[in-house]
Picture (cartoon, chains in turn cyan, green):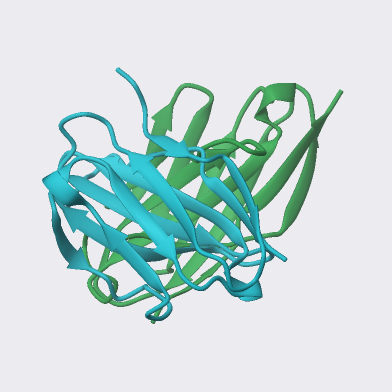
Length: 115
Length: 112
């Protein structure tokens, strides 16, 4: 089966610009997660979708971040306007069940650099 | 909140055994995960422990002691391809049972 796909793999944008990251989960996975790793820090949770609904968005840093999952398939994460501290690697993950005992499947991430 | 500690870096020799430790402080513990991540790639699932004891899976084993808030990942017969970052993550009540809290990862370098 195809894994979790993220696009783009790299993005370099200027401060104040807008960037949209996309995640295609494994087909049939209702649960989709966004995580972020800022340089030198640990991977941190951003939000969790169950189908098209936001189950938990407690990790979203501020209102410059907007995540959507229309139709319960792929998801987008928009950063508008981007700030320097938004630089990092954004990971998407998916799973069939929320209380999964065998972990998620992660994508390779999008490396975002804000200059 | 949660606090997860693991060593930043470790080195080992091909063919040897290495143990990567992870300590955590959390409430409502509901499972500990180990992931492997090669540079520029996706973290990949290695193991899951929710009860005390040792889980063995080929060359990799993971141990958990809930009373001590301690886990380790044991890698045997090290190969060059095992050079990677190893991430310890916990799931608990405070963070929502479906989300994970990660440590910063341990970078393992395997030399010939």
